[in-house]
Length: 463
Image (tube, one colour):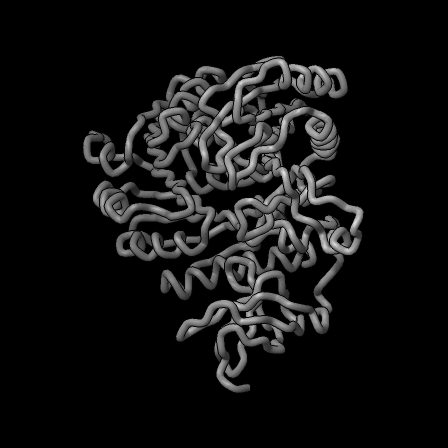
């Protein structure tokens, strides 16, 4: 093959899946990444980005399907950004997720001898998400079969964004990764908005009323929260929708209205009104209860979260007399999970609302040995007068700030349990920490079936 050129179209064989979920072709050893492809596919792809050592292609057509490819359960899976791996068998998904953790450790962290266990699978692999957020659009994106029908209008849609766009919304009627009742609620809201006198918000003109629908589900109590996000305050309109919802679905325990005229596509309201029930729903992780409000953070796969925290607990190996320090403690779920196993647990978190939630959740469970500090870790850590026996680190996707890594190394607890949602930053951080710690083992946990995302728990012991 001649040298790959930008804007040209090539026939390529997909030989691997790269981290990030893209298919990988290697014509004459030169890596080309193409979305929505799986190993074994023969494809026609147009080169849209060209660098010295790699290129990115856009899938034009699958010429020959891989034998590993199966029909996805969802009709939108080749268009919406939610579940790009649905056409891969679940066993194969887990295999690639494990490989991505191992390859990140090798190539980014230069850590070659770390034991990585098989991935702990999610159960179930559909209807597992406890939170879904759907965007409203006055001009929905049309599916290929709709484009052929001239009678179909490009009118109101409520659903998920087409990847790489900010204003193109697929009108979703059946999302397979949220519990089925959520689809009935979504359908009821869609029907109401269509006959209402108010248009959907337009992200280009910043005009319109209806912005988002956020649904939350409690696995333990099988209750729902419906959060209707609008640009303006029109209680007459949203109250009418609220009445229809609560009459039709007794499982709805909370209906909220978040109001925001912010031009960015963010669903958090500048004002929040409780239209029905309570301003939160309750969920359980293990024996612990949590209050979840419309805008609070909570892990989106409740059952897999319990598996993740059980592994954190196992690696922490607490006897009851230890001091535990939890960095990036969020709404306090890990400290609360470990509260019965340690003497004291101190959590540090930068987001004020998360710290308020953490304290409330500790009170809700009558826990007195967890304390939560608000602030940036790199500012809070130097002032602490304690050396923890065990440190839990659960950073955001970007990983740890290098100043924090330095502070962790100077504190030098005997044991660190590192929880990661990004194999690349996990590998980078572990390489820095491995100067004085042995990385004993890593347990990946699948929280997001049909996507490339993978959580990992790493056990580190001081040399």
